[in-house]
Image (tube, rainbow, N blue to C red; front, side):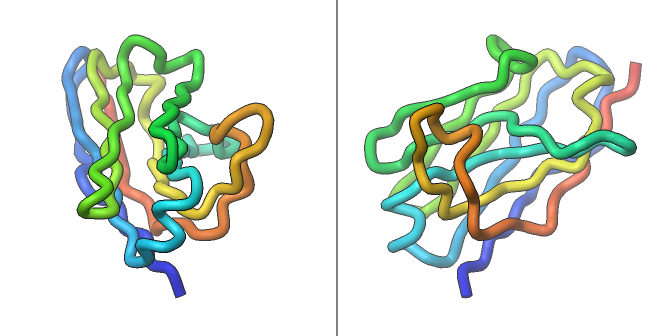
Length: 126
């Protein structure tokens, strides 16, 4: 069983920054697939935020976070981070990390992920 664990969620004011981290227990799955960040706000569907295709290092971001959020990977540690700058109240959500995403033509944001973490809460106040 592949374990995925997020950390770093917190409450911040608008304009602030946070860095989320995600670790996975399975190096084989990590090194051959997409790793992604998703979020779900109350009353809304889960949406992709950012992702990275680990074998090639290709990065993908949702339009809503471009220029503010950056995904990065530390392959030696089988972890990915999400650096979030200039946070807005609309960024308030539970953030989930996912592993094992099978790359498709549209990239990693719409990949089918097999393993999910429990989530970490990000709250941005105005």
